[in-house]
Length: 170
Image (cartoon, rainbow, N blue to C red; front, top):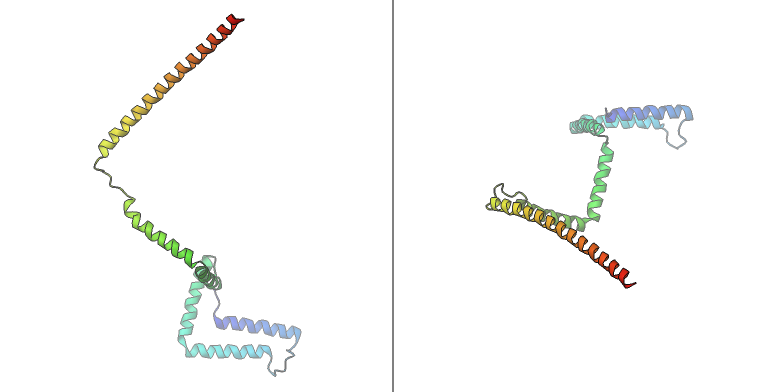
């Protein structure tokens, strides 16, 4: 579950305090330590949230959105980055996208021709013509087979006659 802003700042304060305890205070010229400044930031954020209730509602909404995004294997920052990348892509490929949109409009205009009526006015006649065409194709294939056999017999006969004539010639 995503953390609220105040929880995140408190966690940051604890980590900074642990770092300061290990490494010592900051060497900057500031009189307050970093953990003190984080604590001040936390109280300032808390005051702003008290004044602006819309921020708390917005944060809760983001929390529920992040829960959904995590289940979709995304995060809010990734979605926002993808949004920027998508805008950049659109800007870079404006002309291609316009052409694609034009093509889609043309396809949409042709959709009315996709589904033909079930009962065409000449459907029965068309089926009879198709049946006759199949019969003609079958007859043509049988005729081709007969002609092919006849040509093979003719060829073998001519080869035998040629061989006989050569034999007599010798």
